[in-house]
Length: 263
Image 1: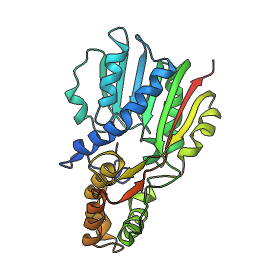
Image 2: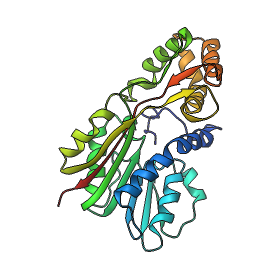
Image 3: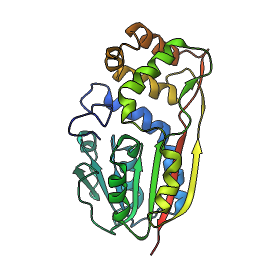
């Protein structure tokens, strides 16, 4: 998802490696999302909204999981990666969650993952999401926030990358709000069924969160260098370190909340 001025979302869908970046995110998050949804009772015949559907892997899984008697609406500002999906129970919508009208009290499940953290107008976007859940239906939100991604060995270049991040995309990419998802949703008339966080220890590799970070720093390299806080050589050194198995990291804390709308 991106704003009209392209500044509330850090990543450009037109970037040549954007689908690959989304694929590694999906590989990292899909097993968790699917396990949580199965445990919450996702069933055939459900009508679902996948907000900020991105690359579409979870949309694809939902379409199969709810079957022909169910339906999935996939909403994203840029639906180019959703065009590869051809389920008869899928509807793609190109729209901005902040102002695109959603049907009220309609969906058995409303899902948003790594989305709301990027939207400064979060209250408005969350109001749109919660109003779309039918009474007794489920809302599932997953966002990164709380403890930050960090190396476990000293890395001055990484510290400069963080300074550049904070001066640019970090101004609108809110990595503090996720621990407050449950309280926020509860105040909007929902019963919290599950609220938990995970944070993984990672070694440098071309998998897991280190690869997610590698793609992010590759996409944002020029943006970071333009701040003057970090050099191109430092960004490239950090990118090499992310693939170095002698180095280790702690990934972003990631929160998931599942809540039921009260009747």
